[in-house]
Length: 179
Length: 179
DNA sequence: CGACATTGGTTCAAACTTGAAGCAAACTTA
DNA sequence: TAAGTTTGCTTCAAGTTTGAACCAATGTCG
Image (cartoon, rainbow over all chains, first blue to last red):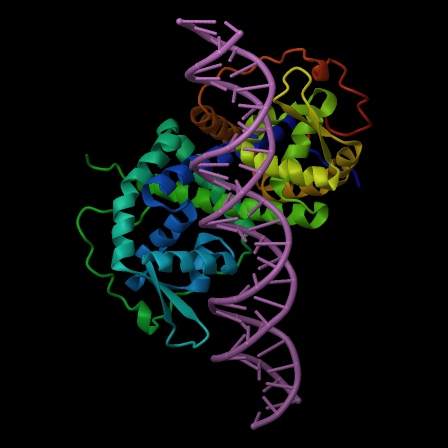
C-alpha cells in the first residue's frame, strides 16, 4: 500500500501547528512557573477542581477532564497536596476511590494566579486572533478531541454525597470558570 | 487594573485547544513510541536533519527549528546518537560548535517509520478537516508562532563547508520533506 | 457463595525535561 | 592584545512523565 503523504498545504499546517503548540506551551509554562511555581498542567488541575461541585473530583474524573493519564495525575496531585493546594479524601461510596479536594489555600492560589495567566494566554494567542478565527480554532479542536477521545457518551453526574447541588458562595467578580 | 477574562467563546476555544493538543500529542507519541521506539520530538529531529543540506545541522540551528531548548536537544541528540541514528561532528568553522548529522541508519529508520506516522497524523487530524480548515489552522498557528518566537529575521544560509549545495541522491517516491 | 474478570488508584524504575551553572571558543574594544 | 563580553554547547540536580506492574475493592456469573 502506498502511503498518502501530506499535501503541501497539510504539511505547512502541520509544521505550523507543531511550532505554535511548542511555543505556546513553553510561554505559558514559563509564566506560570514564575508566578505560581507550577506548570500549566497543575494550574489546570486546580482550575478544574474549582469548577466542580464542592470543589471535589474523583481522580479518574479529573484525569478525564484534563486529558492525562491516571499515573501522571497521581504524581501531580501528590505534589499539589504537598503544597497544600489540594487535599485527598477517601470516597465514601467506593472504598477504592479517592477524591481530590481543592483547599482554601489552593483556591486562593488560583485566584491570585489567574489574572497573570489569562494575560499571558491573551498576549500569546487571542489578541492576535479575529473573532472568526476563535470560532475556527474551537471548531477544529473540538473536532479533533471528539475524534480522538473514544466516543464514550458523557458520564451523567450522579448525586453522590460529595457532589451535592450547592455550588458554594460565588465570591465577587471572578469568572465562573478559570482559563 | 481589572483583568479582562476570556469571553465565553474564547474560553471554549481555549479549553478545546488544550484538550485537543493533549490528545493529539499523546496519540502521536504513543504510535511513534511503539513503531519507532522514540517520542515525537525525536522523530522531528530526524525529519529536520533529513531535509537539511548534507543532512547536517548545527545544534542551535536544530534547536530553533524544532522550537526546543538547547539543553533538551543535547539530551535528545545524545540518545539518538546512542541509537546510531545521528552522529555528532565538530564544526570546522567554529570550534565551539557541534553539528548533528543524520546517519544512513537514521535515514533508514525515518523512511521505515514515516508511513505509519503520516497515517496517524491523518487519522487524528487531517481526515477530519476540510481544506478550508487546513488553511485556517495554518494561518492561526503561523500567526501564533510568528508572534511568539521573537521576530528575528530569518538566518541567511551561509555556504560553510558542510553546507554545500548538492542535496544528495533523492531516492524514489519519498516526499522531499517528512511530516 | 466462590472463582474471575474489571475498575480505581498507586508504585516503581527508567526515560525525559528544566533551568541554572559551567566551560571554552569566539568576538569586542580599549 | 589583554580584559571583558557574548555565543555554543554541555553538565548537573531536581522535577516530571511513562508504562508496566501491583493491590485492593467491586462486579459478574455459575
